[in-house]
Length: 196
Ligand SMILES: CC(C)(COP(=O)(O)OP(=O)(O)OC[C@H]1O[C@@H](n2cnc3c(N)ncnc32)[C@H](O)[C@@H]1OP(=O)(O)O)[C@@H](O)C(=O)NCCC(=O)NCCS
Image (cartoon, rainbow, N blue to C red):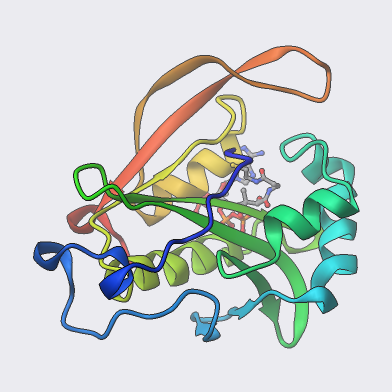
């Protein structure tokens, strides 16, 4: 997973090139809740810190999202690029995006974590579809990337389910909690690939 989301910049038109703009008005990140089929993506705030810490410190999640303390949660997960994933009003996960706004390389990237009690019920796919739809329709993106650990088979399967395809193996891409370098899998999704 990518650990350094960049702050979405807000030049004219939210940085969306004219040729890539959709007919829907561009949205300012972090202002609206996004409704999925089952989940709701809620803009983050200080009220989410405790739930995010509980999710990220669970061993089943920490093995893929290591090294998050309070300060890092506040710095990287709160703000306009982050959403709490809610199921019936309860926070069950978090999902964040970053944007590359160089017009010649414009794309968005996503990272996600659900509490293990919520795994394997299609909620990850629902949250991903909801954010992907927002990034295509309201932020004018045409390409979205995600970079799970190559050994994270459940994540890879879930991402394939919404239309992501493997691009290639990134060797020794990220350092794990064991202090060793692990391979990552770059996956991408274009508008026509999306299984919304
Ligand atoms: C990755 C994650 C977001 C996926 O969300 P989810 O709601 O659990 O996944 P879904 O239910 O949408 O889909 C899971 C798919 O993987 C399959 N699966 C479940 N456990 C699996 C396993 N151990 N190995 C391989 N596939 C598995 C399911 O059968 C399902 O495939 P299907 O639709 O063909 O039946 C979630 O599991 C999670 O937060 N994991 C911990 C943190 C993490 O790994 N984050 C990703 C970092 S890139």
